[in-house]
Length: 127
Image: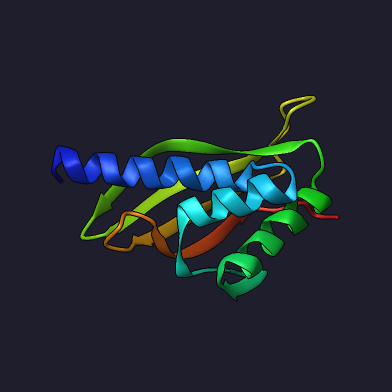
């Protein structure tokens, strides 16, 4: 993996977390556009969407379900051939608890934005 490729993956993942942690409709829309290509998609066990509006709706839904939480990266980003993987968790700002954690695999478009996300949930609340 080249230093340039490593930086591209890390930059894309940093934008990804900015999008997932954006607050307010306007900031969320801007963050999604900066992160995902126009035809970008997101698929996990609970969602399968394409396009900026649908992506923003999924993120807004996560904020509604988990108010006072933020997404944080776990460990380093690993990648090759326009594909990267990384872990994450959803952390309570108030007490540091992390009821949700997962692992995502992304593909990058030629412009460095995310073309697709395939998410896996490793830890979810039981209730």
